[in-house]
Length: 82
Image (cartoon, rainbow, N blue to C red):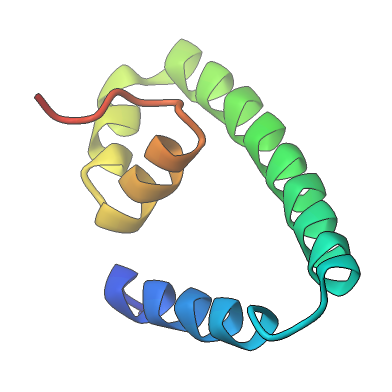
């Protein structure tokens, strides 16, 4: 199982690579990233809606996972800790 730290390190490696690309190349990557994020967010919204109807305890348990929580937080689908 991959942990959150490993995933963030991988993202940082890719960001370092594209930081040296010209603006138009980075624009393509940013556009692709936004499109992928949009479809992921919509899928998560629908999944959460469905799971909430079936089992709130299961949803709460899933959000305890650091990777699940981080992704939901990134997409602003959960509130940050106070």
